[in-house]
Each structure stands twice: as structure tokens, then as C-alpha cells.
Length: 597
Ligand code: GDP
Ligand code: MG
Image: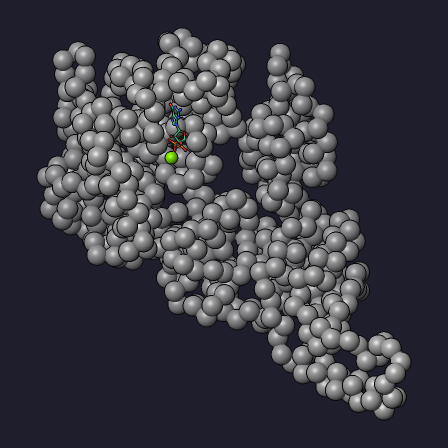
């Protein structure tokens, strides 16, 4: 199809605002699927997921639309894959689109993710069509929702804000027309060498790696020798095609098209999202700008729970292929054996990876306390060490000073919510650098340690501002920090996997809090078990996990002294044995650390 008859777009919305429902209506109205088929197809997808253990997270669909101007159009709908809460994932789809439908539920109005996704679309220079959904519901407040959209960006009201019911189909035809008239046709040059953005990958056990591509210049024909530019890996494109939504082969993809390429490559390490695909013998001069490489911010250990280390290793490789912002490498813990040190964009990312391991691969892992990267300056030879694991933290007497990563955090907040937000930033060691008040909002610029923003900050910010504050962070280098390592000793032996790093000023409070949590999460044994939190060789906090049975030393009087002594002797044998045996560490023990505030 000529590019002027192609439209590439995404639907963005807060969760449950009707994205999937609208996508189904669009596929129905363009006869891509019929109503009966709809259900069956969704089920099929799930089956593929279950049988092959792959995720079908991205649904990219080509629809043929018979427009009111008499022409046929190719509408490529690029679903924002996976969790909408996850901006890196959404931005991958947006980079392959020319426009976006911004969907807002009339019963809920503009929500946190509406704002976040709108900003992402803006950043990608997309044409945005605002659409109010669920107007059929009695609780819909269309006027108020319209107000909120205009408040978000008054230029969104330059053209009509459409009002629809994705459920009944009311107004959806107008959306289809608006896609044609308001979203620009893809630009690009057919005569130039092939330049295609790889915006997603899928691992198929039979076909190998399947790349999802958006063609920016040139053409790809089946059997062409193709080249992935980042690592100069070439392959023959045995099969190319598009999604309807099932895979449908074709013999060529041209400027503006969105489709897939079966690469035949098997090694997940050889490919990455954001790469540029070109032809081997007629290569593009330079690659597309792609995506900014995602830098890990938070690190944590993943250890197999059920003796399934090889499966875990395999699954992590596949996950990393599917999610290039996830990194991992092997490590060994004294307490837990072989496992992996993993890098994430933040705590929410960590949680998603855990869930995906469980849902898609049936694997459960023990997750250790998260930490950021620390730069440690040693006294000896001015040596500098970067550590991503608390177990690498040097002996305190050897340390000259430590630096921790910082961010410049720009927080935009409605004026009436300024005070709780500033209080929150202050609690998280934020240093107010700048403040800029406008009519309705104030922009605050803080310098905050990454360790403070990475874990709970975003959720807390959302909650104190009812979703209205937005947060944008930018790397601000390293800064001196007074941090210490907390070691947890159970039965007087340090458990390496339980150590973590905190600011010294918080150490007292956090360790008290921790040992009391551990009192209930460390599995009980036949003898009382001391749990200590140790900082720089001193126990800052201690509890005794009570024994499962009565303690001879304290239990009451009727037994003879010799019997008591006998019991004490047996318990002390148990105690010695226990030091040798590892304490069984459950996820609850680790959660005691994860939940510290
Ligand atoms: P998504 O999370 O954005 O993909 O939202 P879904 O499309 O899954 O929709 C969430 C819920 O809202 C589902 O139960 C839909 O049936 C319902 N829904 C979506 N659009 C409409 C609408 O226009 N009217 C009504 N009454 N319900 C809708
Ligand atoms: Mg959905």
C-alpha cells in the first residue's frame, strides 16, 4: 500500500479505561475479525502462552479500513504491550507509531497513567486524538472529563474531543475517520536502503526469534539477506508477514508498514529491541536512534526456590530478550548457593519480572533486599570499587568514603498539594534546588539519592498527590554519602544474603524495626535463636526468636534439677548443630527487609 494510505497508531490509556475493548471494536468495524472469532482468538493466544511458555504481550494488528473518502487504508494498530504502568514498554510501541488515541474513561476522568502516557506520546512527537470512553454509563461525567483533558493540554481541544462507547460501538466510526484525518501518513523513502525499527521481539520455540518491525525507509522482501546493525548479525528472512492478529505471511514489507520477520536466530543474547534492521548487501548508512539504553538502577539477587537453577537461567535469558531493560548475571551466595544478581529500572520493574517468571515460566525465586550501585573509595592506594551487592561492601576500617548515585527529580504538583509533596521529598533526603510556581502547578526540582526514590517514593508520591503529581528523574552523578552495611546474624553467624546498605542516620531505627519483623519470619527451631543486626562490628539490635518448645532454663519448677540439666545439655547439642546447618531462609525473611521504610 502507498504510504499515504497507511496509518500507524497506538491506543494509550489508564488501566481499565477500555483500550482492549476499543481495539476489538476497531478490528470488528474493519472486518479484521468478526464477533464470533474475537473470543476464540483471545483464547488461542492464551493457549500459545501456556503451551510454549512464551508471552504474547504485543498485539500488533493490520486492519483494512474503507474510508469515507472512498479509499482503502491500512491501519496498523500497535498495542502498547505488557503492563501499561511501565513506560519503557509503552515507549517502544510509541516509537513505532505516528499517532496515539488517548482514551479516558468518563466515569473516572484523567488518571495518573493518562498523564504519564500523554507525556510519553508528546515526547515521541505523536499526533494525539483525545477520546472520552464509556459515555453509555450512567455515572459518566463527560463534561468534567473534557475539562480535565483540556487542563492537561488545551491544544488537545483544538479539534473535537470524541465521545464514544467502546462497548456499544457508539462513536467508534468517528474515531476511525479521525485516525485518517488527524494522524499523519508515515514518511520515508522507498528508494533508500531498508531501515526498520525493531520495536519488539518474541521468542518462539520452533521458529526462534521473531522481530517486530516498523519500516521507516526502503523495502524488505522474503528471502532477503537482512542485517541487524547493532551487533552486525545477519540472517536470511525466510518468513516475513503481518498480524491479523494471527501471523500472516507476505512477500514484502515497505515504507510505513508494520510487521514481523522470522530471524531464525536462537540466541537471545544476539538481538536487542531498538535495533535497526537493514539489508546485508545494501545497508543503510546509519542506524535509527532507537531507544536509550536502559540503565539498571536497582539490583537484587534472584535465587531458585525449588532447585531449578538451569530452568531459571534459561528463563532469565528469554525474559531479557523480551525486556531489554532487564539485566542479570550469575553470582553465588554462601547461604543460598548459585543464583543471579539482577538489574532493574526500579522496584516496580523488579516486581513485574518476578511475576512474569512465575506466570510465564512457573518459576518462583527468593529475592534479596534491593540496593543501588555504590562507589567505594578505599584507604589503600586510593582504590575505587563499584559494588552492586552488599556482600561486596568492604570492611569498614578499610573505607575512606562512599559515594552514592543521585537524581535530579522534577516533580510537578498542583499548588494545593504542595505541602504534603514537599514533606515527602524531605523525608526522602531530597534537597530542594529550585521551585517554579505557575497558575495551577508548581514545579519542584530536588536532588535526591537514588536509593530514596527507587523503592517506594513513586507510590508514595502518587498516594499523597492522588495521582496528580508527576515525577521525572534524570541522572545526577555520584555524591558522598554516609552509608553503612547492616549484617544480619542468626545464631551468631552472618547470613550473607540478608545484608543490606543504609544511610547511617537510619541504621538505628531500621535495624530495630528489622529484628522485630525477623522475630516472626525466621523459622523457629527447638532452641531460642538470637537474631542480631550488626553495623561495623557492633550489634545495634537483637531479638531472640523463641523456641518451638519450652525452654528448660526457664520452664517451671516441678522437674528435678538433673532432668533440667539433661534437657539443657540436649538443647545445647541442638544449638551447635544448628550453627552448622543453614537456617532455612524463606521469602518472608527477605520481605522483612524489603518492607522496611
Ligand atoms: P483496558 O485495561 O484499557 O484494556 O480496558 P478494557 O478494554 O479491558 O475494559 C475494562 C472494562 O471496561 C471491561 O469490563 C469493559 O467491558 C469495560 N468497558 C470498556 N469500554 C466500555 C464502554 O464504552 N462502556 C462500558 N459500559 N464499559 C466499557
Ligand atoms: Mg486491556
